View 1 (cartoon, helix red, strand yellow):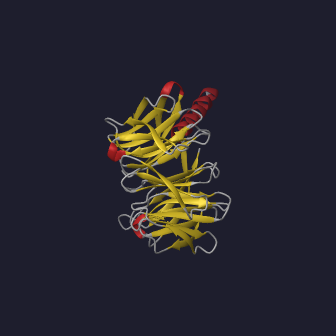
View 2: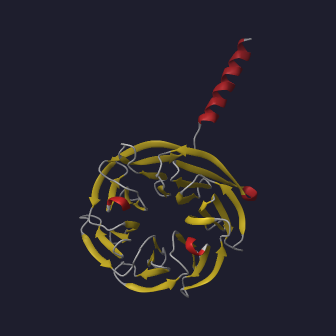
View 3: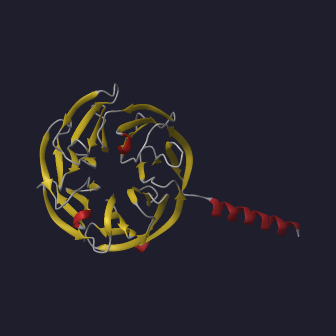
Length: 326
């Protein structure tokens, strides 16, 4: 009987561990007292272990040391900060401001203003071309502004049919994929000709705000709010190949190529984790409770951490939660 009892106990422990294993482990929380309102987007300095968080509702950029677990600086005087980009060569930060239409550069040592480009009304998401160093800023009634690699000069723009939300750049190819929710489409841009070369009508999948790209797997992931679904497109055919239910009010979406997973931060109060499988199988393997309104996240492949900006709610201070993918 004893060997059987021992075998049963071992089986029970293994089963319990399997049931309690989570794909995301909360390992640290950095308090952000005094930060009010919602967050928008983030950028990282992996070598310096810094995270830059646009506190849109607070009109500040929060600079955090994610290794030491502390706030280094709160850059004040911004006007609805939205998109953020880190320029490692110059050790500078670029911040898009939706309220005054300025792309502002800050020295990442003194955090003093180092320059600006104006005339970008409703400036929003920011991305940098890994090859050319050019900086793209979504803005206005429908355009991507192109700035030089220093972020000091405007080189041109690419027209779109409505205001752009999240967009992703290929590294091996010339395309940019852009969410254009007010036009109910995903636009495909050739950044060499600086023109739209195709569109995917979103149809029933509306409110397409966040986006992630698996370039090697030829898949584009689009988070939609109406209804709350993940739409998966083939970048080879621009056809819808799958869709999956997600939590409501998603605003950020990242692809973890190491684990073939997607992380979605949703304002409903959940972090969704979706496993990408063979034959277009996309399984939601976790729905981690967070806090209502916590819809800003950032995944750094270099640091292998997922960061979630949690706004002040119900008497609880704002904070940054740091998760380790399991």
